Image 1 (cartoon, rainbow, N blue to C red):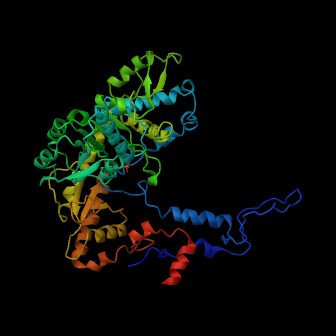
Image 2 (cartoon, protein in one colour):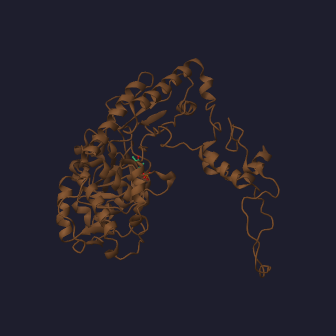
Image 3 (cartoon, rainbow, N blue to C red):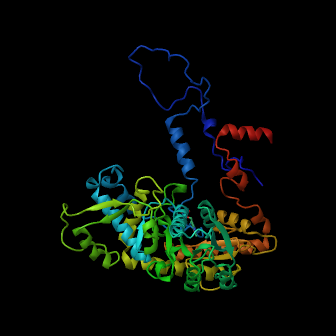
Length: 519
Ligand SMILES: *Cc1c(COP(=O)(O)O)cnc(C)c1O
């Protein structure tokens, strides 16, 4: 097994190996003023061993590196729970319109009515899709939305003088961010086991619900890709005990147009715009995790929120009535009548993000919603669920399905397809077939889990090619297991020491050399 110091297996040279003394990539004109030495003590390094290369070599170096990237624009990305769907390019065109991209965040309201209208309409669209009374677009990610939501639950109980509630219940099929958000907000996270069908165990839930429970955090569909069959009973049990229900909305892609979370008793939920609404995941870069709430939590929402006043609000009725229509209804707007203002709800938990959240991401999500329209969004859920069930059927011929009932947008199988073969071996071998592996070893309640999410944007041919690769790997696992143990064979680097690569990353050549020297 290699280590994270391993060189590319293809013969790509390090840029330092291309270095030749005196070679340059820039030409600076002769100075036409006299030279002066820098004054006093200047912390200039005399020794800065940068490679000396031409412009062309630099361009080739970085272009070559960029081609080592795996992305949804080049390949299928079946990462369960992450919804790596295609991001339509027109979203970027919309976000780069100068009226949006060059709007200064400190502009007075009167000079950015268009941007505020966009935010207002996005809030409205999310409300309409989820059934919530109000939405704040502030949080920057799903996990950030979770923290925001739990802080609102906290504010709600404290506001009522209900100070005994210190526990938040979380099913064992939840995402790891849930207990983290709960702890950050000052609560104790407590696990609720799933039953044999993958639902929340109702008997245990009842036992655990009392006057010290602040709420429950539930993901539906859960991380097994299964719809929580008793969702209304679950929320009712928590409400009867005086708790509130947080819905982790990361899997909302599966429900669009079919289920409004507020209708089944969810009090607050985040949306992952970078999952459900096709904005880029951005390699950990800007995301958006707006939160929606029912009326009783509305006063606690983080601000600022956009509201519409006067005639503009009336006109928007037409737009809202159709949920999302592609054309504006009603007569031409009179600019002087339009009025969008920013406000903080009366008991707001405050700001959770600078300015208006990640505005460019919000523009992209809104562009996507307009392109799809209400029927298109419904079709997203239909095709996401259909694709996942088709793929599950194909793969289920050889891979074990621990909770075998119709799935929603994703499903979980196990990678122990032959004796001595583990999920990691299957995942690494998939790289040789040109596919990004699915999520592995998650959810934690399934040993050797492979969690697969196909998304609605993959064609039948791609799904079949992916299934074919997994089935062939299962054959190889039985006939030549070492092929899997030693995989990947065709990638630029072999197996990495992943823990060490994350904890102790080697980010420059000198660190590599030092390590190579010690081996
Ligand atoms: C992705 C995800 C999250 C966290 O969302 P981020 O935007 O990555 O912070 C939370 N819960 C579930 C179920 C998820 O899939």
